[in-house]
Image (cartoon, rainbow, N blue to C red):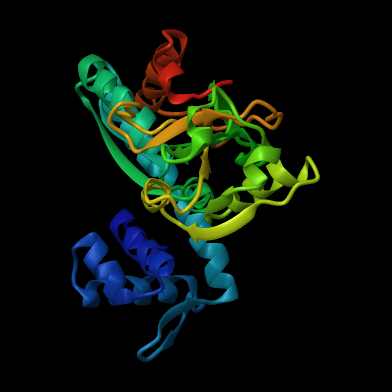
Amino acid sequence: MNFTLKQLRYVEAAGRLGSIAKAAVEVSISQSSITASIDALEASLDYALFVRTPAKGITPTSAGREALQLIRTFLNQSQQFESELQSQGGDDAGLVRIACYATAAPTFLPPILKSITENFPGISVKVMEGNMMAIADYLDNGEVDLVFTYDRHVPHGQSFEPLFTAPPYALISRSDEASQRPSITFEQLSKKPMIMLDLPYTRDYFFGLFRALGLEPDVAHSTRSSEIAKALVEGDFGFTLLNIRPRNYSPKDSRYSIVPISDSSDVPIFGISTTGNLRQPKNVRSFIKICTKLRDDGIFDCCTVTA
């Protein structure tokens, strides 16, 4: 079989996006080049990778789905091989691809990126964001080298490096007298309207915190954006639950208060997940080492809220 890495990247992008046109935009190449790469690989393999439907894009065949997974694995190994070669015999260099839980990234990511820039100027970082389900898929598909996530969402076989515990807390409008309390309970919160952060895994987790105590939250509004949830709290529409403290939170300037929850027993651990049984390139190992050093120095203490 004769094919190039570029051809494989074109085919993988088309399969992941379900569209030749979208793949062409992502990799900055003509649609005809994407189509030619698919045709060449299908001819070489002697079976169809995709079913092509006019005006509806492309869909992987059964064999195509298996082939795409092999291609992603190979491209990931190729990326790691390239980074490892770049880092040999000198300073750490090359691209580190990371994915972050979007609601948490603004708080913990800036000190990491600053430390990387200061200590390893040859390392560049590509950041992808998403919900828990999306970033797990990024790692499974080989699109990133590591993800920042919670321990409970790390599949069996993947490695996990803990950074800090993240107890849930309530964000309460300053117009509510409960915002002045040193802490609050789930029973007290169940009597107030709740703004639910409606994201995969997150919704079930927050519901579970109440139901473990035989309680049911009064969900008045739901949103997939933590920023909108905060805005609704500021507008006196209810409280919301979060795990990681908002970046640059100032009690004097904010229209909401952070209130610890005194009876929370289900405390997740936030950290770094990587593909198990895979030796990471030198630059990825250095990136993780920076994160653990920041952890040991207490830099992430500002991310948590405890009663």
